[in-house]
Structure formats: C-alpha cells, structure tokens
Image 1 (cartoon, one colour):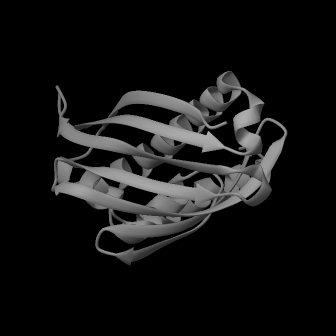
Image 2 (cartoon, rainbow, N blue to C red):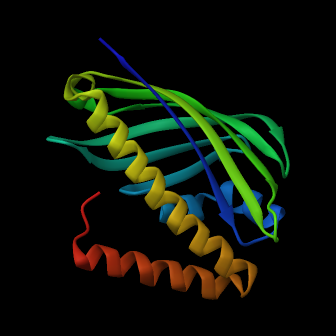
Length: 178
C-alpha cells in the first residue's frame, strides 16, 4: 500500500532571483546538490533524468527517474513532477511547487510544497522514518545549493564548480551517510 508524504519549506539564498532560477535549471548544479546523485541529464528544456543512490532505514536503493517541469514562470517558479523506480525497494513519485521571491534584506526566498507517494519496501518502513529521511535530504540539498549559488553570485563559474567539487570530495572522504 503506498504511503503519502507532504513537505514544505522556505530557504533564503543570498543571491539574485535570476541566479537562483538559473541554478535550479542547471543539471551540473543539481547533480552536486542532490544527496546520493550519480547522474543528472537535461533531456529537454523542461525535463531531466537522474540516477540517485540512497538509503532509507535498512533499504538501500538506486533510483532512476524522470522529472518534468511545467507552469514555468521565469524567474518566479514552476511545478515539478516526477517518478523514480528503485527496483525491489519500490518507487517514489510526486510533485512540487517551487516559488522564488525577493527576500527581506536582499537575496531570494525559495519556497516549496511537495506531495509525494512511495510504494514497495519503502512504504513498509514507516512514515516517520521516510519523512525524517526526506527532510534530511532536503536540508542537505538546500545547504549545498545555497553554498553554490551564493558563491557563483560573487565569483566566476570556474571557481564555483571547483569549490563545489572540493566540498563534495571532502564529504565523500569523510564517508558521510546519506
């Protein structure tokens, strides 16, 4: 039986709205920010495919999935919908509404509302563990995303990619769990 999950959040990123918008649509930035991400490929102007290795409680799985963007309103927001399959571990599907707005004191507030559904072994784990894992992954994503976008707003692209890769390599060396 599938389990349903809702999650909302706001993050202030110290960068102009256009820079945040551009980063949200950049597959290289997304790959660096998504915990456990092995690959992100832009398949069209409004779609991406991805491979992600993740662990939720005792279940470790490699998900492959596709994401489609709709209701694009650059640089103010869009809707994301997607589905990922993790073999015997199950599936995850859902969507999110992402909005960008000017933040008080400068920068951009990124807010999101997610509704998702998981099935298979993942659905048997328990909603609290799934919710806490999803919140942890979202926190890791936005921490990294903020670092990259804020750095790019104040330096060249080459420096940003180098800084992001250095941070990613340090995390990998420390063996941080997902």
